Each structure stands twice: as structure tokens, then as C-alpha cells.
Length: 491
Image (tube, rainbow, N blue to C red; front, side, top):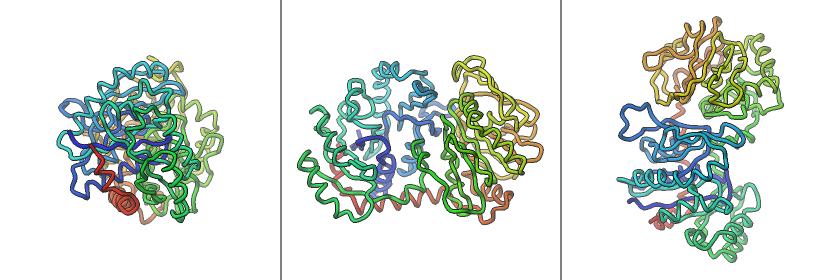
């Protein structure tokens, strides 16, 4: 079995995903065969990964974070890198994906009872990820200080103690209270868990790090833990795909650019990293519009992203008045793109006769495309190669969706995916819908599409920018952390 080290956080969104990706890239640059692993993830931003040994399946689902971390390692993503993925559908329930495949749906309380069975899958995947590797870097979820959930934990100390993986604790100084969060974690952890922690690091520091010297001494006095370093605010992280929807709360309009793209922040928004390649374009401003605010009237393009609950988000779309804003946008000559669930919303109606998404089984669509969608139990999960019909350019992406969409506008497909027509385009060409995630990731298509909207100079090499950002983050971690000690403590 490969050696392993695990990063756990004092709370959610402390930067574990980026740190693991950066450490993976740093280890790769040292010539190590390194792999990422996250026992349990909760996110509606999913990627399609290989299912080893399953040649008849299109692929399986993992969190986008582990997809990114696999890129940092220079290896193909595998479903075993994230054996349990929770995809929230309501405030109290989620779809449960195990080793890439649909396992069931569970309310929060029911899921706690399910965890005992899921640990077996976690440990099975754990054994497979380490095969042929020198090092596995594990990412925890949430915080080990959630001791009310400890007895059935599979994501943090429950996993670390079973797999005997040493833990580095991550504290986020940007949110404040970092001394209390690190010391408090030490205080409330049971001794069995506390002894798994080999030290800690501080993340997201801004300014003169010497000003925190007394803080580090205080943490050492209270905990006895060693500090592996203080990581500055990593500007390059903004160029990486974001996994957690909590980041949407911090995204705001920036400086005026040639094209403003408005993206409604759906309650169950999924795979919003579809917008990242547009954000990377210097002449494009992407604005995520929170509930309660109108879609900006000066937007040239509105993108309706994916959703884990299409009917529920469609109803909320109307409650927010975004349907009226969208019609006004169209009357002004604006363009609209709907991706996956967003594509379904653009039709005349969405029907869910089997109640797959919930108790509401039908909703009127936004009516910008002459199509209708019927939800069906079988989920399409696959990586795809495609070609844009309007621009006759290659596309690469993936599909993760329920439902079948039909209607007159599908006679004008937006793409040909694996030889099959996909999506729909309005008669005037200004409304486009597709089931393919990753549409804007194709540099040639993105440049041509932006040119059709009057934006020149498009065509950033997005994948190269992601690789460059990973290299920059790895270099920052090598400078500011004792990586030799961290890797040396892996066992």
C-alpha cells in the first residue's frame, strides 16, 4: 500500500481542495507517483471518471475537486478517488453516489444510518487507489470537530483511524478566529483522534506573516502540535475550477468588459464550473446573480446552468422574477444558453411522472425553445466527444443528466455527440440548449461563439491556464510549507 497523509480542516471551505491539489502537483514534480482521495464528498459539481474493469458503462460520477486533483497528479480520474458522493436535491435530502454509480436517495438522518455500509466501499476504493502509487494525499470533509457525527464518520477521523493515516489540520485565518478553531479542535477531539494529528498549517494569510508569530506560539502552547507553515492567499486558486457552491456567495461583478454574462444562482445549481472558461477570458465579465436581484439589463448573454432539481429551481426562477427578466433580455436581442437542467428549463414544460425529483411532477417551462422534457429513471453519465453544429467546431465534455427532451427545435441540434444529435437552437439562433457540460471549455468554439457576440480576442488556452495555476500553487506551497516534513510523515 502507498504511503498516505490526510488534510482535514477546522471547518468547511478552509481551502483543503486547493491545498491537496497543490501538494499533489508538488509531489508529482518531485517524481512521485501520487494520487488523490476523498472518502466522502458533498457537491453538485460532479465530473465523469473511469470505472476500472467496467467496459460497458459510460463512466461514473466523482466530485470535480478529485477530477482537478487527478489532473494535478497527471493521471486519469477514477471513481475510486471519491467513493461516496452526495448530491443535495433538497435542504434535507441528497442523491447518494457510491463508486461512481447511483446507490439511492437519503434524507440526512437516514444517511447517518447508511454510513456503516458505505465504509466498506470507502475502504475498498482506498485499497485500489493506492495500487502502484508512492503517495496518496487524502482530503477530509467538513471538520473532525463535528463530534456529534463521530460514531458513524467515514469522511474524517472515522476514516483516518481505520486506515491509519496521519492528519495535518488546516486552519483558515481569513475568516478570523483561527487560534480558537485550531485549539478548540484539539480540546474536543477524543484522544484516539487527537493522536492522529501530526501538526497543522495556517491557510489564506494576507500581509506580513511575522505578525502571526505570537499566534503560532499560542497554538503550540495549547496543543503541542508543530506548525508546517503559513500559506499566503493563493491568487492562482481563482483560476482553478470551484467545487463548493459557497464560493458563489463571494462572486461579484468586477470591472466593465466587452461582454457581461449573467448567471442566475439556482438553489440547486450544479456544475457551475462550466462558466470558468468564460471567466478566464479578458473581455468577458461573468456575474452570478443571487436570488432577490434582477438579471442585469446590460448583459449580452444569460447562461442558465445545470441543476440537481430542475423543477424546483424552475419554480424558484419564476418566484425571483427572472422569467420576466429573461423575456426582456430576449426582446432586447440578447442571447441565452441553457446547459443540462438549464436546457430543460428553456422548453415549454418539464414533466416528472415518476416523482424522481420530488412531489411536484410538472412545471411550465420558460418557453424560449419549442421542446419538452420528461424525466426518466435512467441516468446518462459519460464523457463525450462532440461537434458544434452552428460553428462546425470540435467540442469535448461530459453528460450527467436524467430526462429526455423532444420537440421541433431539436431538429436544429446544437451539437452532434458521439454521432447523435443533441440539444436545440431557436429559429433566430440566439437561444441554445445542450446536455453537454464543458461546452465553453473548447477554446476554438468559445472564441467563435464570443466573436458571434461581438467579442474579439477570445481563445484563451483554458486547460493550459489550469495547469499553470497548479504549478504556481505547488511552487507557493514548496516555499511556505515544510513539504519535506509533510511528505516524510506519510505512512
